[in-house]
Length: 95
Length: 476
Image (cartoon, rainbow over all chains, first blue to last red; front, side, top):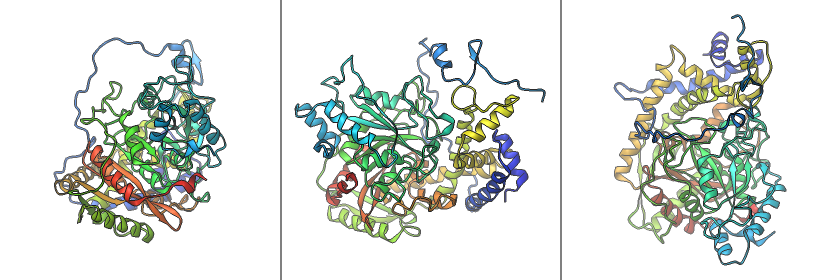
């Protein structure tokens, strides 16, 4: 069961603002989904290695050759705010 | 209707090579249909065929000869809207093109349009798109499946000869099944993910939607390959061949009990069983087998995919592209932008994934899910020691009604029960049309070991000929 306080904590971690209605719904829906998912806690997985990736590729590095990157104006073109040849953002604030 | 529309892509290429039709004529025939789309399959349609060296005719030697291609919205296409079905990227035109699309255009494919999808590829019905749901051409009150619903519906309805989609847990195969077309999820790593707006990076894979198996092979052939821009991409050990064969003699097919029993609708199961009998008549041996951890695959998937998504979607923060909602400080801008830009399902998955990764829950959820993933992959490896391919229904039901499952996330997730295990194992799988149940398409899924695409395509081709599915009613 995911309660209201947990929903608000996770929403903060996820940088999501939720309305009161969303908090209530999220608590209900996540609890239902996690209730189903809990079934994997019944499995004996002692000593089983985790798989983060199915493909066995390690150290895939391309040749260290300089190549052109996106021009600055192109990289900035879709930004909501440009400031001094960079991305503009509001102040981080006092906190 | 132009009779060109009735040709498969491979047939159209023949026609163009013989000089019996022009690429411009073919493009215009499809463009007119895409513009008149009543299914909401497209989010953008090209003004005209792309120019090749100042000419709209592609080079004569180009293997795909200028045949138009529809591309799922989440592939970045330079200067063309690429929104991944999300309000947070509404109107976004990226400065570069995804490798998969680039390779196909270099081979002579012409970008016809971008197709609708569930937001960030999260969904099994295409009802999660910020640009409205797509309708199933077999019954417009029903969903096309998802997340690549626009691509599936466009190919089924003859609005495009073929299309690109992506599959994370079934997002190519399930809509292919529900729309009565062929959908292939290749081996993980076979196709570069560069320029695909990421959902779950260890699972996402591009693949073709086509009217038949031959077209799937043809499109796949020009997509595969290692890419310096995707360090998880690999060179395919085989050249993808056009499928051939007249029977299945000597082929050993396994039928996993866990994916063919409970939860599969009766009409879907009957069609599946009938095709198993057909496979035996064609010389294949068909025997039951077991994937003991498959029943847990869905749970593992719905932890791993949201966990990866929660990290991937952190980039949508109102800074570099897309929507921004102004606020007094930076954190307020982030949270307000994401609250306004993401839809309900995306928020749900971000929350689920963040929870699974959060301190105190990581080992119990994400860690265990990764261990289950190991067991699921081991089950497949063991099965492939006895069998050449495994077969299952693609989706547990035919297309459901719009709105039917939209308020029940768990019911929606269960649509992926037969497709998720292969995704976790990173192995290739194809869905082919397997006849109708109550007038709606069902799908037959075949999967094989990593990089067995040629074997998979040959078997699918032989079955396709024997099944003799007629997709023309959906093209109206």
